[in-house]
Length: 187
Image (tube, rainbow, N blue to C red; front, side, top):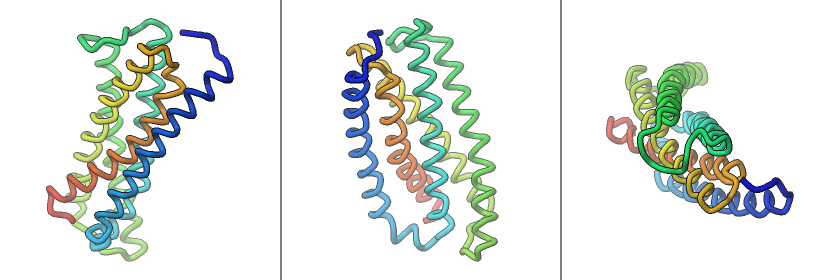
C-alpha cells in the first residue's frame, strides 16, 4: 500500500464520507416513510438508535479487520475459500446474536419503565435477533466488497471502509428492523 500522506487521507476520506452521507440520508428517508407504523409500537422506535449503533459497530469491526488483513497480506482481494475471512464472519455473526439478545431485553425493560406500549418479550427478542443476523450478513458482504474494491484501486481501505460501512449500517439497520418486524406482524 502507498505511503500515508495527508492529501491522500483527505481525498479518500472526503469521498467515503460523502458517499456515507448520501447512504445515511436514504436511511432517514426510509425511516420517515415508515414512521406512522413505527409510532404505533413506540418501543420499536426506541430500538432504532441503539440498533443502528450496533450496526455501525459491526461495520467498524469488519472494516478494521479487513483493512488490516489486506495491509498485512493475510488475505488477497479475491472472493473464494478463505479461513481468515470465514473466522471473522463467524465472529461477527456470533457478536450479532449475543448483542441482539441483551439489546432487546434492555430496550424492552426501558420501554416498560417509561410506560411505552410493549410487544410480547419473545417477539421483541426474535425480531431483534433475526434482524441482527441479517444486518451482520449485509454489513459483512458490503464490507468485503468495499474493502476489496478500495484495495484493488489502490485506495487505503482504512480511509474508505469504516465510513461507508457505518452508513450502510444505518440504512441496513432500518431496513432489516422494519422488514423483520413486518414479517413478524409487529408493525
